[in-house]
Length: 111
Image 1 (cartoon, rainbow, N blue to C red):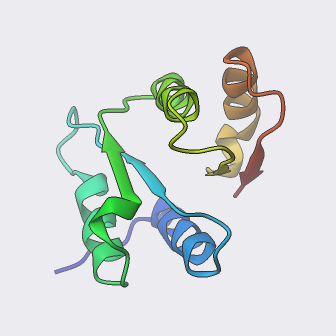
Image 2 (cartoon, helix red, strand yellow; image 1 turned 120 degrees about the vertical axis):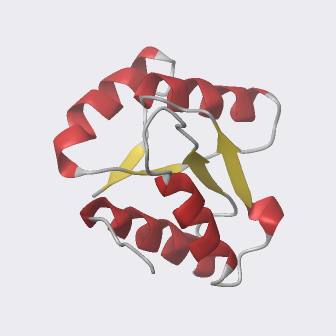
């Protein structure tokens, strides 16, 4: 059985960016604090849509600040240079503010 949450459309958007060559990696948080592990469902979905395991970066991100710290780390070690952030419309202002506070003066955010 496969459950597709309303927010799961972000996985389709991220997959589209990778398939079109606009992105190389898919970063997905692995928040283990809840009962349903959406990240595992997303990873399964991506692997079944021809993404290679090395294209999927996971980590225990519980919130947007954790995500920003992970992206900051990936930029610092040269793993990524640019990124596209896919989030829901209700989170956009907060996401932009948090990423700006980490030194990302321009980020592309999609709903």
